[in-house]
Length: 344
Ligand code: ATP
Ligand code: MG
Ligand code: FE
Image 1: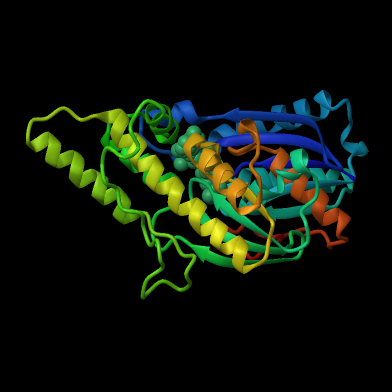
Image 2: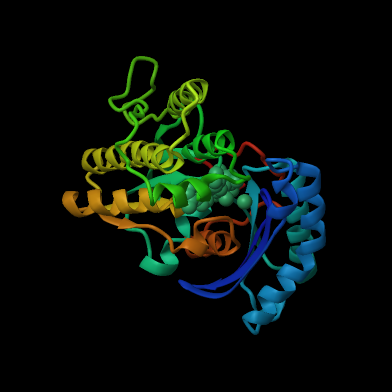
């Protein structure tokens, strides 16, 4: 099937066409620079940017694929989770396109799209696989029985997401928003063992729902304390070493738990997705641990890690292929859409 995918959950307006497992076009417009000076995404600015970029993005995605709207089999749009005002723009626009063209419309889960997108490079999911979601808002380990129908959450963060932890430490070190990529870059020049950074919940602990839960707020606090201590003592902060030590701690605990999950669920494949999967320390650790554990680790290429329309279109293809019914015409957005819900 040919599916048009539309994305507007946060600060990227995006549209793409996927045919089967082939990416025919992929257009992304970002309002990130407009938010940078505020240190975070301003919902009102983001919503307005979506309203301006929606039609140009969809038109370009169709034109780049050499298609008309009448050529697509279905439209998919992110219905959540995300910022309500942003979701409303994309979903309203997608509903208008669906009504005008008579095409079926799927309101899909953006976060599940982050893992679905790996199929463009690695082909369909094996039946029963583990997936690690590491995005700006989520850090979860999923058991994916069937990506179109059944997903269980095996573990999740009890506080901050890994990406959030990076962004917060980055702010402390004076990097502009979003800080994750800056930590990544500095970490490449630092010593990962220079500073002791705790690995959150290595073993799971009382209060954790299951052994695969994560916790990163303590990691952030530990780094903050150390930096403040050094500043108070008048010493210069070894930024590269701080970044390398933080990145090593976070990447190690994520990779360890993902491998442990693969063993327990007897999965020889690990699907990885979300903006934080662009992190080079995490990518290296996952591939290294995958090799030594006999697990095929599937991480998207960099441009498909952060928010895009291809991930939405790819999940739409999965839903069409599985014969899942389209969303009802007046489906609602869900800014807190749970990971177990694939489609509205
Ligand atoms: P969600 O998908 O949970 O709704 P989101 O869409 O806002 O959240 P993404 O776009 O998936 O988030 O990911 C953005 C996050 O990825 C930010 O926290 C950013 O700092 C982080 N990130 C991107 N590239 C890197 C990198 N190279 N190293 C570390 N973090 C990175
Ligand atoms: Mg973004
Ligand atoms: Fe995302």
